Each structure stands twice: as C-alpha cells, then as structure tokens.
Length: 473
Image 1: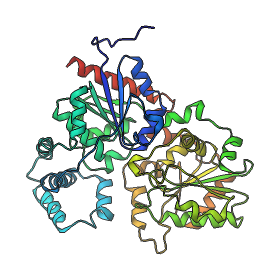
Image 2 (image 1 turned 90 degrees about the vertical axis):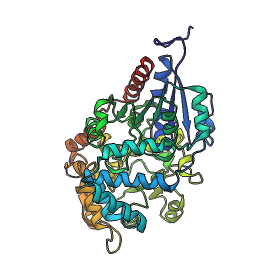
Image 3 (image 1 turned 180 degrees about the vertical axis):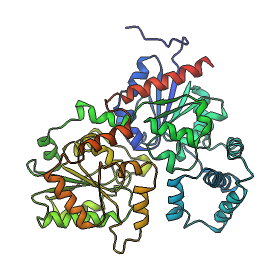
Image 4 (image 1 turned 180 degrees about the horizontal axis):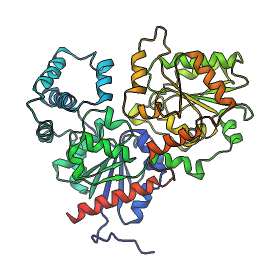
C-alpha cells in the first residue's frame, strides 16, 4: 500500500507533542488523536516524562523528556512573579484573588512581598501586555534544555504542541522552539487552568480548548489570542468514557474491585491533600457510616487522585475491607511527572463512574466525570476538618472561583454544609437517583462542549490545520 504523502510537501512533516503529566498521557495514548494525524501523512513524536518508565511507550514515536533546568531566581523568576502580580492588579480575576488572599500569598518571602507591592503601585503606569512581551524576550535568552534544543535543531518539527503550557517541563521546550523560530501551539490542559494558573508568558501561534467558555476566558486573559486561531474541540480525556474497549459490566467491574454488584456503590473522589487536607474527615465519616449500616447495605470506593496516590490510604483503611475499597490509581513509587496509567487503571477510572450510585467530592473535575454518566453528585460546601480552618476556602471555591461557581450554583450537585447533611444527601440520592438529572446534563454540556467520543478527532484536525498553516508560512 502506498504511503499517503502530505499535500503541502513531498516530505512527512513532524509534529512534536509535549506531555509532562499523566492526565495528558492518557489522552495521547488512548484517543484517536495521534492515529488520525498519522493517517494524514504527518509523523508524530511524543516527548513524555513517563517515556522512560512505561515500556509500552517505547517506540520510534516516543521519547523520554529531555533534561530541563530551572530559571535562575534573578532576574528571570523575580520578573515572572512581577508580571503575574501586575496582571492580577490590572485585570482582577476572582479565582486568583481568592486563592492569593486565602493561601498563596500567606507564605510569600519579604522579597516577594516587595515585588508584589511594587507591581501594585506601578500598575497604573505600566502596560501589562508590553511588560509581558519584554519578559518573554528576556526568557528567550536563557536556554533551559540544551538536549531538547539539539533535538529540535536536528528534527525541525513543523509544529510543537504543548499539552501543559503552564507546566515547568513543557514551557522549557516551548522556549527552545521559540528560540529556533519553530511554530508552537498550546492545548489548555483543563477547564480551570486559565483562571487559576500563573501566566503563560510565551506567545503561541494557536490554541486548542475544550469549550466556548474556555475560549472566552482565553480571549479575556490573553488578549493577543483574539488574533490567533483558537479551536474548540471538547474534552478529549472523556473520549475514553465512550470507548467500547474500556466498557465493563457491573458484574465484571465489581469482580475486579472485590465488590458486591448487588449492593449500592458510593464513590469518594479525593483531590489534592495539599489543597484540601480536610477531605480525609469526610472520608472517615462515610467509612464509619457504612461500617455501622447507617447508609444501608452500601459499599464505598475511595479513589485517590492519581497524582497524589501514595499508597498509604489503602493501609489505613484495610480493616474496613470488603465494605470499603481503596483503588490504586497510579504507581506511588514513581515521581509525579513519571507516572502513567495503564489500560487496567483507565478501565477502573471509566467504570468507577459508570457504575457509581452516588459520587462525593470537593469541587473537582470528578463532578464532571459523574455528570457525564448521570451519577448524582454530593459536593462539600464546608471544611470537614475539626474547627473548619479552611471554611472560607471551601465556600469561595464553590461560590467565587469562576470555573466552579456555575456548577455549584446550577442545581446539578447537592451542596452540603456538614457531615450529617452529607450522609442525608447520599441516602436521598440512593433512593432517588433521578433527582437533578437535567441540571447534571447541563454541567456536562457546559464544561465539555461535546460528549460524542470524537474530541480526539477534532483535536487532530485542529493540529493538522495549525501545522499546515505553519507550512504555508
């Protein structure tokens, strides 16, 4: 069979994908995105931080991420923080203002506080846009990955796609690509990144986002993006929810997780223990309620976030087995950037929410996972820690932070204000799972944009269009 040649040259132009987090690795490994691009005559290379650990990824199209050095604090990182503070002062963002006031700025050094104050005082006098462009020129004078630069010079990809443009490793290779004059594009990893993360300083030639809402936020926070192509493709990670290869019957799923398929399944999806350590007390309460039979003959799956699964929770809760099961969501022996999820762990992720009867969490993307499968969601609107030291944070994430406020106030999730209310909400949903169904459907539509399992295909088409435009230039 003849190889299909790219219509813009006699060569096979290369597209380089950067991936430094398992949340993107699973998109690139398990959706149709890379195959669709290859079918159009492009070569694809995946440069990933999990490439050295996962033997299933070792092929001609996958490389371990090259070594990356940090910027020196002075002047690079000091000026980066000045730029962040300047943008925050000139363009107030409810999510970042709340996070700064409640926890981010509390631990600032005296020097960083001075930088913050200087940015606030000079905000009426400076152009944040011009300041950021000047900072970008400065950052481009620093080579953070000579190894990455050498690969780029040798292979000259038609397009470099950062799938984590806010992340330490991706940004370094983007900087090297910009220094060499190579086109770069950004896939915004998740729906909260634009409103909660620090600035993306480097200029991109195009963007790929989940939804129209994310596109609007991109234009708001990065005005230059209005003159760049922005593609709305849906959330490719959720394509996996629609793939037959990951579909398991309730019987099969329960057998794998040592559960009883005839009993209700409650899922508690944990977030970052650094952000919300009080969630443990909600889990502990549910464990006691289930063990005492106060939630009927139910079972509990505790699902750690795959980036924070350290294995300790399984040991801590093993005495409550088999009524309480703690899933293994990644390999806790690996560094966070080196973690990946194999097909069995992907199957657990997909089918946990397919077969859950009620899902409990604190304001995470797990809410969307559950909504796609029309599973009732109980969401904490209080800090369950003794004394509730983070009460204000829990409230503001739900009612101030711009990515989650529409969900929290949609009526599609049950906000609870104490542990007893949490138990009552779970009990009610077990009896009436149809409650709030229409509102849950709205949540899934609002966040994802598409729910047809074809976002990887749309992502591929967007990347091809960006690469072809780069070739014409």
